[in-house]
Picture 1 (cartoon, rainbow, N blue to C red):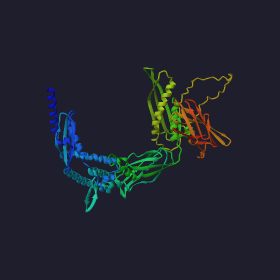
Picture 2: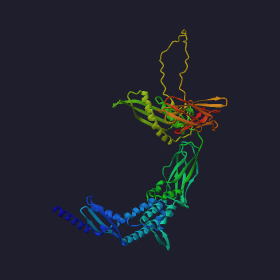
Picture 3: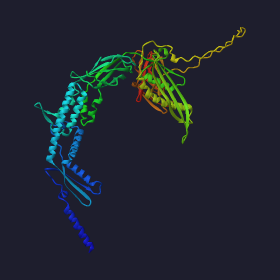
Picture 4: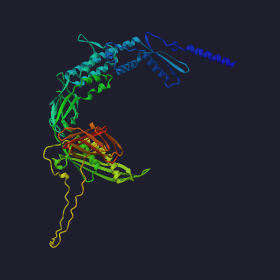
Length: 609
C-alpha cells in the first residue's frame, strides 16, 4: 500500500512540474518585433545564472542578420575574408555594448536546470544602427578631410595616419551606404577613404643627384648623394627612407628622413665590394606601413606596394687591386691561417708574396694554453684556452685599420687526449666563430690608398738581438791552419700554397702548372679536415678557369682521384688524406682565377702561376 502511494505521489509532482514549465521553455517563441535569446544551463555548474545570461545573449545576437549594401565599402572588400570575419565580430561587440536595450522576459528553474529568456526590440536596434552609421559618416569625413589637407601640404606620414583612423572610424558601419552631402555634392565617405589611401603613393618620385657616383673599394664617397622625394610636384616632408645595395655591398647612412623641402642626404660610408658596377636602391621605409599592416585593412598593403616608388644610385668602382700580405707570427695556428686566407681571397683582397707589394698587412697571432682539469663521471676533462689576435695595418700610412680578437675562448677535451688533438679541436671551434665574426668586421674597413707602399714595414721587423763583443785583444795566429768547412744545404722550407675553403674545413690547394705541347695541366689537392667523409661531385660547368687575358678557358678533361672524365668526376674524400684534382685545357700562361663549386660551396683561387 505504501509503495502504491509513493508512486502516485511521484507522478503527481512530475505532472505539477510539467504544468509549471512556461510555454517559452516548452517551445521557442517566434516574434516579428523582437530578437529572441533563450538558454538552459545545469544548476550544478558554477555561476550558472551568469552563464545562462551570456548564452542567451549570444543566442539572441546570432539572430541579427548583417545586410551588405551593394554600394558599401564592405562589398568592395568582401573577397578579403579577414575583413569580413572581423566585421562580423565587431557587430557582436556592438550588440553586447548595447546590453541596456536588452530585456529579460523571464526565467524558470527546476531542481536541475536554470532557464532564461531575453529579447531585444528590433525597432530599438535599427535606431541604434542608424545612429552608429551617422557617427561613422561624421568621424570618417573629418579624418578624410584632415588626410587630404596633410597630403596637399606634402605631409605623407600624417595623411596616411588620418586615412587609417578614418577607415577605423567607419568600420562599425562598413556594410552600409556612408553617403553625405558636401557643398551640394554626394560623397561616399568609405570609398573616398579607401581610394585616397590607395592613391596616396601614386605619383611619388624619388630622384637622386647625381644618379651615378665613382668610388674605390674599401673607401667611402666624400660627397653625399642628394635624395629628393615629391608627389606631383609637391615636396614630401618627414618621409622615412630605406637604402641598400641591391648589387655590390657597402655601408650606407643608417637613417634618412626628408626635410621640409623633401630632401635628404645619402652618405656612402664605405664600398666593400670590388664589383665594377654596383647599385643602391632607395625606397619608402617599411615603418610607414606598420599601422596598415596591423589593421583589418591589411589586404590593401599589396595594392599599395605595387605602386611603390624607388630611386636608384649607380656606383662605378674604379678597377683596382687591393693586395694583402698575410703574416703568421710565432705561435699562430696554420688552420687559422688557412681560414683567414680564405676569407681574404674570396671576397676582398689579392694575396701579395711580399710586404713590398702589399697595400695592407694582415698579422695573425694565437696563444693556446692548458687550463684546469675537470672531474667527470665517465672520464676527466681538461680545459684549454685560446686567444686570437688579428691586426690589419695600412702599409702606406702604418695606420691601424682593424683589430679583431678572441680572448681566452674555452674548450674542453678528454684528459687522455694529446695536446695536438686538443689544439686541433679547439681551433675548429675558434675557426667557426672567426668565420661568422671576421667577415662582418672586414666590411667595416676603410682603406686609404694614398701614399707609397712601405717596402720594410716596422710591424714585421724582429727586435734586434744585441751582439756584445768582448773587450779583449786577440793576437793573430798566422801559423794556425785554416779550418776546413762543410757547406750544408739550407733546411727545406715548407712551400707556400694558394689555398681556399670550399666549405668550412674542406680545402682546395693549388699545387702547380705544367705544359705538354699545346695543353696545360693544372694540379690541385683536395684536403678534408671535417672529421668525416665528404662525397664530392664535380661537373665540368662547376669548374671555371680564367687565363692571363681574362678569358674563360674550357675544361677538356678532369680527374679526381681515380675518377676521370670530360664531363663529370666524383670521389669520396676521407679525412687527412690528400686527393688529387687535375684539370686539362688548352695552353695558358697563367691562371688568374680557378673557381670550383659543388652543391655545398664555392672556392676561388687567384693569380696562380
